[in-house]
Length: 93
Image (tube, rainbow, N blue to C red):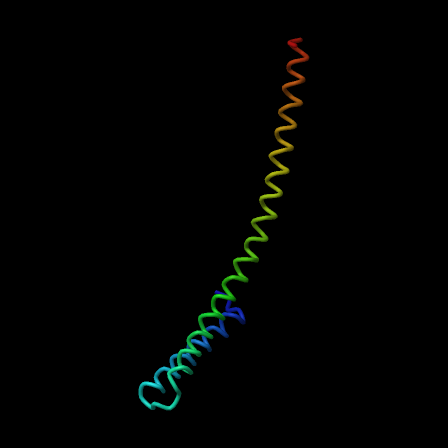
């Protein structure tokens, strides 16, 4: 599995969030708002990374669907030509 820079940043933020939460519970140094802020930062950044990855996947799917559409259209045109050829050879109108 290849780690990307986004994955590394997410893991660093998760570790920092856990460290700040433990520091709050045992050392009582950061405020509750700072703990919540670190967790929210981690969640928002994770969602942003996942959305950008899904957006890239959607671009690939869109290209594949356009290719499929043109292939299907071309296939139906060939079938239509073949049917017209058969119709002309049988002289059915």
